[in-house]
Amino acid sequence: MSRRASRLAEQVEAAEAALSAVEEELADPAAWSTPEKYERATRRHEEAKRRLAELYEEWEEAEAAVSSAADRA
Image (cartoon, rainbow, N blue to C red; front, side):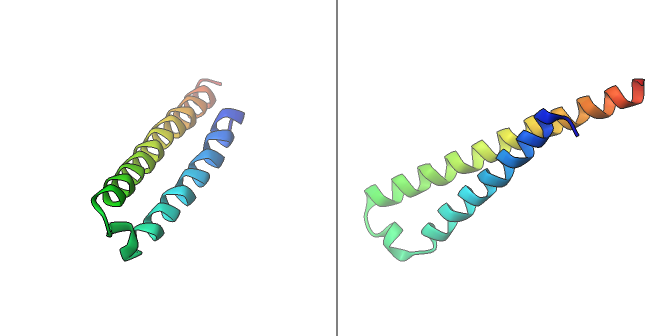
């Protein structure tokens, strides 16, 4: 695993934890008590999911690059 892939793996882990934390907050009915809270919670959830998807994509690309380099060696 390359340094970049290792760093991305750590970032993915952190992003998964952040998404989990947001989802736990959303399980609380208070998160849905006003339209403003609803909008803010929904926005944070979407941002956390988007960030995680981006990191997964970058990580997969880094892993593929390492695998491709190993195949050429």
